[in-house]
Length: 196
Ligand SMILES: [Fe+2]
Image 1 (cartoon, rainbow, N blue to C red):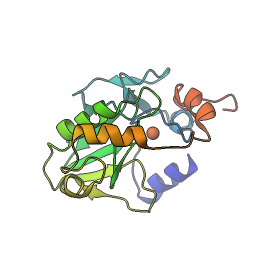
Image 2 (image 1 turned 90 degrees about the horizontal axis):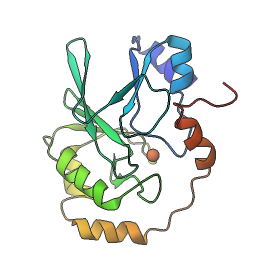
Image 3 (image 1 turned 30 degrees about the horizontal axis):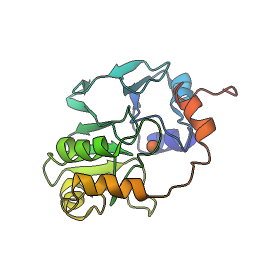
């Protein structure tokens, strides 16, 4: 919460809402605490299954912020309730599409086939110069573009077929997320825990 509220203050922004992309498995969202402090609304995808969100967004739903429209795109695959957001030439892709990667598909209702289809059909249809902001990047990069991901993404780029992607996902050995047993129950309540 402090990190995000500090950034908002430094950038002299006015926080209007919290748009979640999915129920995270590796950390607890600060959404609940930030809402408590600021009163802004929490938005989630309608398939996320969370309790306590103020707005549940269906595929294609648009949030109007002044002159801007933010479009909701349902992209199940990393989790069954994942969404991405599009506005003004920018895609916020959560853990669906990373810079040179994709979110894992082996828990939380994940599906390799759905992830591949949603990235290719619902994200790669945006113009090549669309900026991609993923939820995180482990090497410190902040953004990419649809054109770069189509060309270079080793998981879902144009050279990879759906069956190759599914096979690759099956063969990946991934460790159990350390905080999943604490994070998912809290995040199913927008980040509410017994301590706050
Ligand atoms: Fe995730």
